[in-house]
Image (cartoon, rainbow, N blue to C red; front, side, top):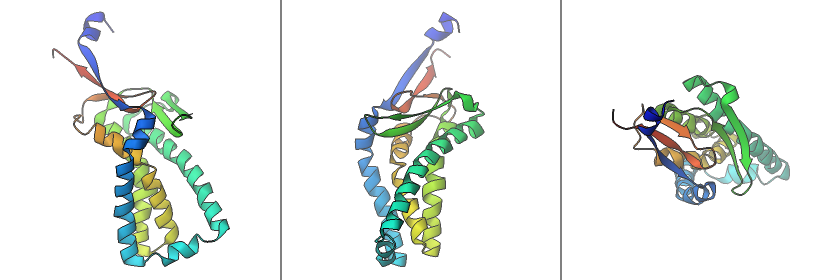
Length: 190
């Protein structure tokens, strides 16, 4: 890229530190709990949930599902970038930030904001919202609890979605390599 073109581009940082994202996600966490627990409780009650998870084996199984689901959540982000943006899988980096206790999948290529939003929400939809919807219809405790678990684990993604709410769909964004969010590439003078 020539210096002339580079001078006409600037980046707008729409990211926050991972530890701050965990704190700022708390209101989203509370809202997620309310919009899932209240309808399920109204439709099916809460007795089945308590009785299902009073056994140690079911509780341990839920913990195992949680850790498997976190890995799957990040893999779904990666697959979303591959499918929606045609990014090679080799451009996706996986890791775990020990300071904030946050796993991540990082896309090494800029994508449109529309694709970035889709990649943000896909894990929450597949692992969280669809199982919750199934639980509302069927009364399944397992669908409800796992859906609830993976909806609230997507609170950071919901926060990032909120941070980029004013970015136009066609604008290019680059996933931030160390923080929650992205950088918007803005071309000036065009």
